[in-house]
Length: 238
Image 1: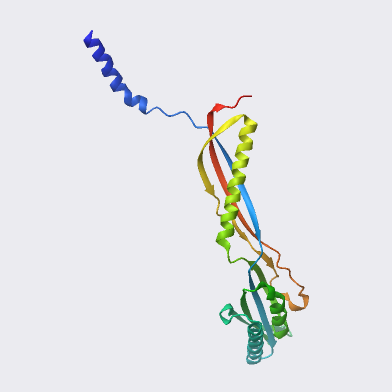
Image 2 (image 1 turned 90 degrees about the horizontal axis):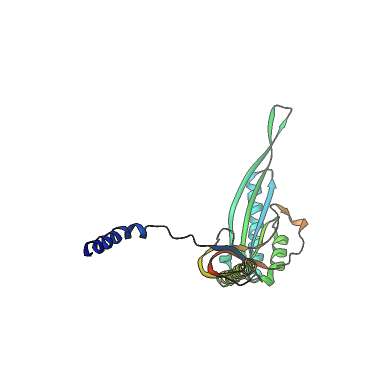
């Protein structure tokens, strides 16, 4: 009798590793997405202006362009824009040729273009700054972006709202399926879909003559998350 009991115990010990390797039953879960958008009053304007001059000679085209750019910069500084927030960061020189009598190539004129990039930290001055720049010699409005300088705070707010939205969606689905929710399995923020959508105005090479007043509006700060929650084993009563 002792031998039989010992043999049985030995068999159990030998087989226990095999039991430990058996796969656990699959965990049921609900995966939902939540997104939120926070609208913020802009506090910064990024403005890119173009200055274009056309003359028969290159020195004349460049000299006039330099004069216009200097006048634009002085206009910006006169309205209180800090010099460190003004940058001339692009120059383009292009000769324009035409063919005469199908054989002779003749130089028509030179085109010189420069851009003036401005960071305006007082949004209330936007209309005056833009109008003054156009009157001083800017010929194109290349881009206008309204942004916020307190991005971290608003992005955290949008993320928190997105998580709440995802949780509410998961609870609504669980109620509809008559199940109970278990613990959270994962929470992932989708960085490529979240972020900031700045209010943008202006079209490349927009003529100054077509300028119309621009309202700052709002900056949209967005966030999106994916929430996965386990489904508890105990179902709700029907």
